[in-house]
Length: 289
View: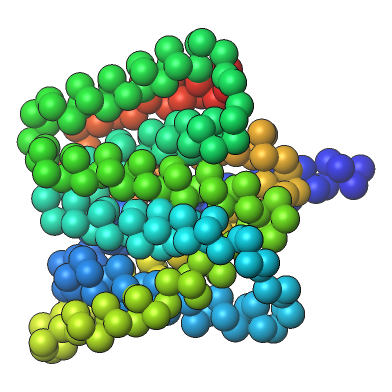
């Protein structure tokens, strides 16, 4: 009975984490209307780092070992700096709905880096479905759905690669340190650089920044950078990585729904079709990983 309860609680926490992450790109799209990508990236990291530091102190978490430093640097470069900055830059050229299609490749990128970093040898079908998923994204990127931009698409691909690397490295490290602890220490590690960038990129005038931009900054700082990881990693711990991890396949569809409902962005049939094909490819790739 306890196992069933833990499984249900795990799925609930995992689903909440996915819902939170699904709002990240729409919130970033709103925030870049008032802030520069560099300021948004650094400011969100500083705000999240302050909250993370409070959690680490209040819950009396042990410090990571010196040997963990290299892995934490990779997590910080991928999740704290690379993905937020590159997506913020991309969303100056494309809609959040267009960018969300690329998120369908994130589980695949994570799996590939897990193979490369972990020394695993997946079945040949893994590479087949990986190639099909990547080909679908390439076809979508070069199609003209009215919201395409080569610059934006390339930035999104780079963001997915860096985020996949950060996720894979963080997953390996979280087995010993814990999931939310990994992102918290990575945030603190990046704080000196992020603080310098925040000071250097402060807006010249605050009066013209709208309420929606502030709300976007608050969301990506509090929820996308920290709270989402707390629920997500708790869900994986309670319900199992293999089972609860499949919920990540819902993220592109939830993101498209949020982009359409909250931002009133047009959702082309090509976005839905490409997202569906990518999710199917990723699901089979993970099965044969």
